[in-house]
Image 1 (cartoon, rainbow, N blue to C red):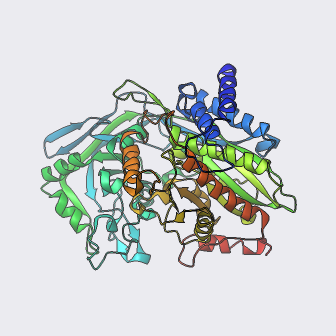
Image 2: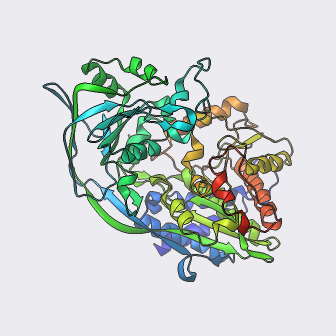
Image 3: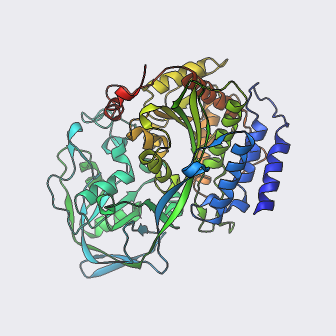
Length: 555
């Protein structure tokens, strides 16, 4: 392991002086970024799965970079890491799952027709002929005048639900359109919400119908993300968030099931986009499952470095990126089993390291600046959730988390956006610093339907009230315009996202990433050297949590 890391460090250093054709003048070196990604995304790191040898190598690499830059360790007991206790779930044997309608049984093929798992500490899942109930989008949102359950008792049932929220595929001319922020996916559209809502109501399980458009990714992403070990924070009452069976089914599988039960899937889906929707039983249809579960506790780690503030060391600015990916899993068509996660998210870690270099080489910040590599983001934002519950510096006096997740590898872009609505104070500051770069502009999230605000580590801190933001690579590329940017986005999601093909490439143009990192640096430097306390807009679901700690912050 040490020899691999030594080669990696030397490679990153050796590439530092290389020039990238056409790159704008920035203090962030694109070649250094490429060097870090090449190392962290190499096969030697085995896809950086939590609680694997790949984690050990990853932490050693990041710690080595932080040490070399003169950062101070800010983890447990004066060390570099924060232990994150997790429960690990695997299915070591065959998974038998089937639907039955009347006397006719249909066995389902795990990974092709369906994926199922459990995140409850049991050693076996056995479900026999559980009744199926379609509950539309599985949403209970009284503040939006929406209730898909209508008082229906769901105990002992397997719920079939649609992905996304009601606005996702609704005609904008429909009078109901806009209750769920239009095409901007809300938290109600996320699979995590649907599982948790079902668990709160006592459902036996949830099967989410996968459709590529509403989900914002293909079946390969679902399959690959669910085919290896699953993890969760160790919770006193996991049943409050997880039903026994959690899973996804293919769209055609759902269509066939509804038809066998005498229902038209598309008609029921259309009905689910109305406030008058009521749950409908799939008459005579049942679900059965039988599989062993290997559940054990384990420990993964966040890695944390710090530059102490000179005037207000108890106040903090955080930079973060998740270091984990999917590890080793199913082979792709080439037989490759290593999910390297070069773009997602070795690129973000590379950005954090180079931002640490910028701060370490500049004037000391007035507030303390922390640089964090979060674990288990791919398993449900777990490392950042744990940090939010066990912060190394008080959340009340944390000015912001500036999160990095998937950097631009397609070259310089004229635009830059943030994930989500773009209406928070941090979004306005980002717009200001983007505009300070010649020829660049801030644009709103072009893919709000993907719900990416709820899919990155900044969400964990936002729920705790901390202003948090993740920048999104621009789509208006200097080389090719918006058409080229959109094509690159679609190509990545279809062919590399959560697939072994997400590997480092020598032909990447990281000049755009370097320019984006300058925006991160300008924003971080502003927050570190001022008394600014960004906030949330009046309509934000995070505003109350932030205001509850207002007395702890000095103006």
